[in-house]
Length: 195
Image (cartoon, rainbow, N blue to C red; front, top):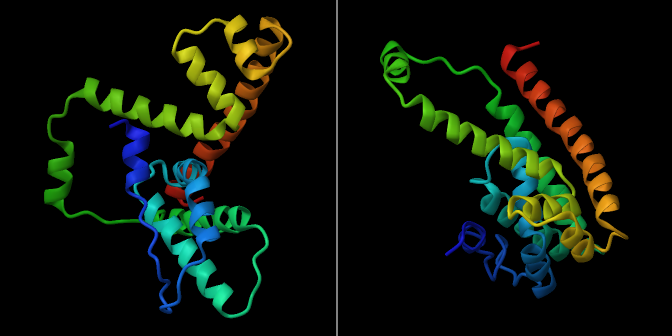
């Protein structure tokens, strides 16, 4: 099973919300449609997607309860994505609080570690955060380049006029993603240094 299929399998939307009312099927379908974007939002703020299923499931429950209170939600996907982003930001702020460790924990952390393995894990996380900073078309082009597809093929798949146009537009997408990527890291550094 691929990583993405495995991550989607973690999503489990309940048939009834926390008030005991049936969850609208349109809401469940919207949750499945926004799953990949949810993962990327959570990665953008929390550096990993481990909390993504819980956050999206809570957003669905909240939306279902709001609908039971006679509140109308016109755009399910936008509502869910906005809820996911808000909760991710809340968790980021909560995680930036200072945590004190005892001496034993510090010694275990300072013990011998495989630098190469740590570097590979860090690189993989940075790449996943960077992919989250790209728009959907940018991620597609990025994935095709990783698969060693040439620009002519990419232009054909993505609808660009020619290989040069595809390459130029991808460079622009990379520049925008890098701005988001560095802004994200600066914000995290400020949060950790307490500035």
